Image (cartoon, rainbow, N blue to C red; front, side, top):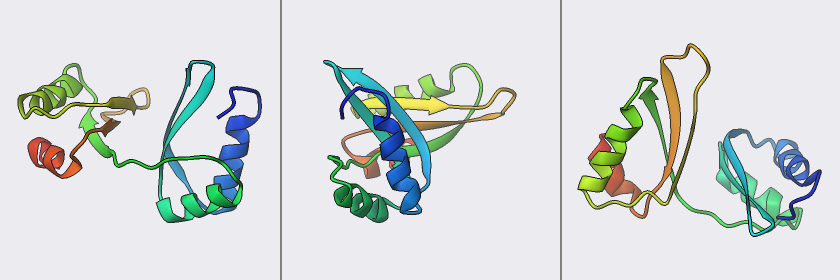
Length: 120
């Protein structure tokens, strides 16, 4: 995506108009271009809306897990995956201040195997 004002707004508006809810987002800059990763409630509706709006996208599976919001929890999950020789391609997470839980998104090459390892 272009890295300029309004690009993320256009993407979000397109999905809103299609009735797609975004439950997680990370947006970063790579070599002057914007890269946005989204977790949505309706992937098929999102794909249709993005195609219709001529917004380029790709799709990949990821794991969304809820962890205890305490020091070391993410490290424990990462260690389990490492022991099973499962690479974490990327990860992002969020929580609210005072919350006892954190939501973590992990992209891994084999979702089924990873879920089996972490007990999901």
